[in-house]
Length: 192
Ligand code: SF4
Ligand code: SF4
Image 1 (tube, rainbow, N blue to C red):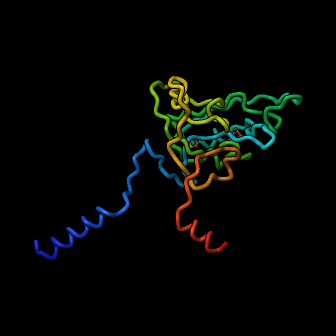
Image 2: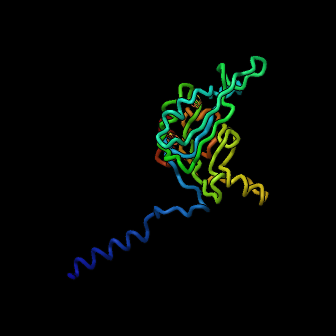
Image 3: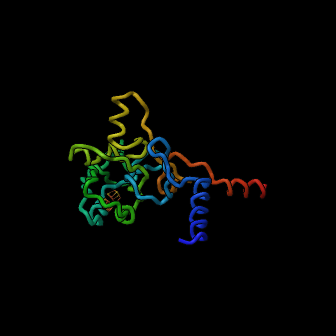
């Protein structure tokens, strides 16, 4: 190896020593996700609280992995659950079958099922991977195993991610926001 090549390689090592690391100490620090990340689904609601899902099963028909099961029921006009004539009495997604392709979201005529950001879904029993409405409806925080752990330990559910902004499709969903990149803050300051 020539002296020049040796100096070049040492230069690269020295540069790397003082550059910002690209690794993240997850789970102690949250990882930054892109806004269109495909994580655990969320069943969204209208601003008046009614569920957007009308139990039409189009998402189940579109799902290439046969992961979705829907059972519809008629709404009681006095106490409707959804904004349509019918609602999903049962709505289940088998997360072991799901390939997180997002076709269910594309197929939904009411924007009810939306891909969210939670990805910490490791669990032990097969049955625990079947997520029902009690796991998917918006405002339900975290994934099933996280909730269980939080109940056992008395600690709040921790979310291991941050996003720069929440997609508008995820109406009512509160995700932890990442601090703005420094360059954007500087731009805002200059334009003010
Ligand atoms: S993300 Fe894809 S595989 Fe998963 S439930 Fe939706 S359509 Fe099925
Ligand atoms: S989530 Fe959308 S597509 Fe699926 S049953 Fe509900 S309204 Fe129909």
